[in-house]
Length: 225
Image 1 (spheres, rainbow, N blue to C red):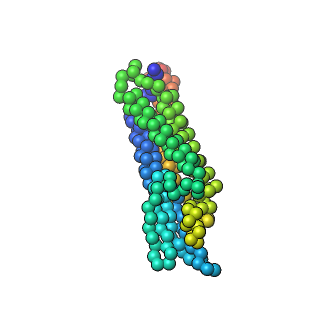
Image 2 (image 1 turned 45 degrees about the vertical axis):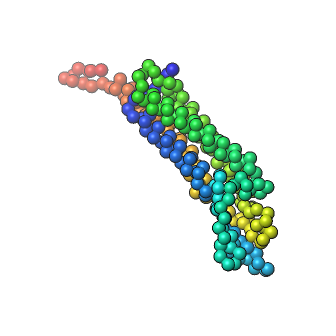
Image 3 (image 1 turned 30 degrees about the horizontal axis):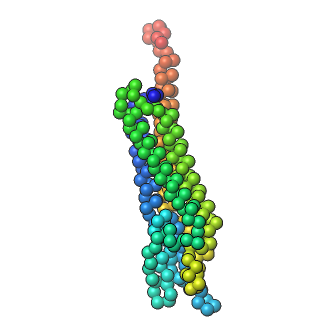
């Protein structure tokens, strides 16, 4: 058991930002724009536009143009990239995101509980919230680093199946990280706002307390403390 900062809505504000981070991570996981790539198709000695491809952690869409219009195909990532990219890294990315969501739920719960419960019933206090935010931030950063490494080492070079490459399609140096990845990275920044809000409030309260304690005034020539 531990005490928490002055109860003036700071914990609720931190919980709101934690919830925003939670929503951002879920949105990133469920969206299909972690990677976006333009495709090229080699025909004889010329190169033509071959369509596009984008995907997320679970699903994606491929549009291949054989010269008579693009053919759209939905696919499951776990099947599409077997033998193309390291599936274990993708699942590790998802796993660390899920862990961060669990920790963020704890941050929200602790913040709300410590704000509204009785002073002598607080749990973990500010230190607990700092630790939870730090762990959630660490998990999100591990996720982003894992996927960024996978992208630079494999996906940037190729996002196509072997049969697609045999048909003349290529995505070499045509792929880029999509907005879903940047949403996840932004969630890491939002998570850091939570402990910063609490820390700033604690510093402010401490400063005001000390300033009032040493305040000296004079009335009719008499010094008042």
